[in-house]
Image 1 (tube, rainbow, N blue to C red):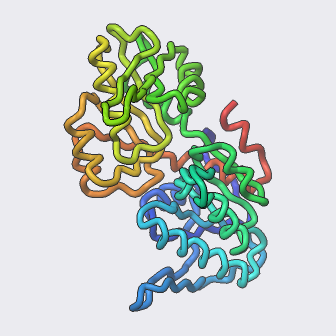
Image 2: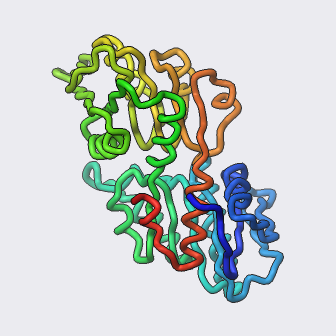
Amino acid sequence: MSDAGLTRGMKLIAGNSNRELAEKVGQYLKLPFTKAVVRRFADMEVFVEIQENVRGEDIFVIQSTSYPANDNLMELLIVIDALRRASARRITAVIPYFGYARQDRKVGPRTPISAKLVANLITEAGANRVLTVDLHAGQIQGFFDIPTDNLYAAPVMVKDIQDYLGEDNLMVVSPDVGGVVRARALAKRLGADLAIVDKRRERAGESEVMNIIGEVQGRSCILIDDIVDSGGTICNAAEALIAKGAKDVCAYATHGVLSGGAVARIANSKLKSMVISDSIAATEEVRKCANIRRISIAPLIGEAMRRINNEESVSSLFD
């Protein structure tokens, strides 16, 4: 990615969900943040005040809707509303991690499609455009009636894999059948082979049987996923790969949700390392975990923002 070029009438605002990533994006773009207050009243209502003139400006609001998802989502919506009422020319919601993305379809009778509801809320609040990274399901782009750019963290992961693991004897592994397209794309970029973990439960009450599709004996395996939440799927897949003779297993995931006992589970697993992006702010537990490492997607997001501001192609980032 090229060094950030000139930006035209571009302003940045950051919510409170991931200040560290927002500041890195600002450094990449060589832009200060617009003065704004985003705070809570005593009853935890969100209050926002934009303290600079933004009339006619191209505004980018950086806010992941990660834990606490509802608080961070409300912050985003209220910031967008404040900017719309302040006559900003264009408002782009930059959402590195799009919460509610896993609720992208009806999983049973009388259940919501919350990802569509959140898309409606962001649009109705006044956003003109959305920029996000590795949506859990690509069709969520169609839930928005405004332009939506879905960036891919794969180029950042490929560089990290080449720097830390080299390119010899690698095997990219999808931890489940649903992630095959993602794993195949990474394998193609690396020029590596592909394997799949096929998990199935033969009978109710019995543990899952892990079948490995592909020859992993003596290979350095790379598990790839978009979201790691409880860590159970990744850790079980790593154990199955080692049992089948894999030399070692590393995992890469864009969004490290890592809820509950996930960090402890990863620390005690067969994983040599778990690499996540900084799309979600790291907890102290994540920072201290010896086999969890973080890579930054700030240059990727910053470059996409610069291109949007300059009306340049975003998709060519991935050519």
